[in-house]
Image (cartoon, rainbow, N blue to C red; front, side, top):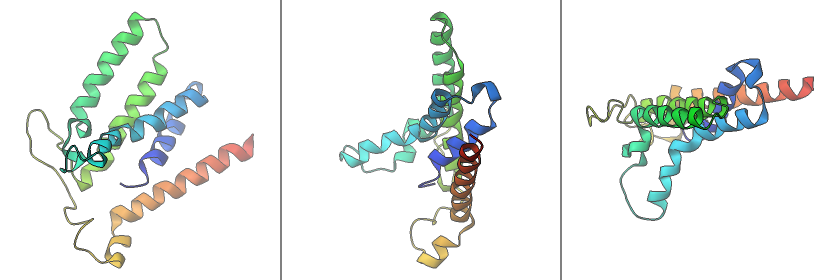
Amino acid sequence: MVLAHGPAGYILSRCLPTSWQTTPIVGMAILGSIAPDFDFIVNILGISSQSHRLFITHTPSFWIISWVIALLIAKIGRADARPVHAFFMGTVLHVLLDIPTGIKVWSPFSEQFVELFPDLYFGVTLVEFLTHPYVIAEGVIILATILLWRQQHVRQ
């Protein structure tokens, strides 16, 4: 996914219980759904030239362990855990959406890079790229987000 992680986080937030439909919680779901890509800064700064999807921040185990730690901290601090859940649901959604184009799904137990479409971003024509089911799915996610957002704001 290139553009649909944030919109997918919005869709996720709208699937949460009604009591969670607050701006801060929706914001945390959206932020969580793009957070795994913050590792891209390493590539921008020239610190690493390898794909950011090879970093620990693109593994489900990293985010699940972080989720448990954050929940423990929230519990100790007697804080509302809903934003924590929304954020980490977003991060897990992100890495799941990245599986088709490749991540280390089983890390740290295996360093195998799992990808369904290894040549999606390289060696294809523009028409092949734009008509690829994964790219079409990304467009559907963005369109669904626009429709959901419009529906939500027309009612208010």
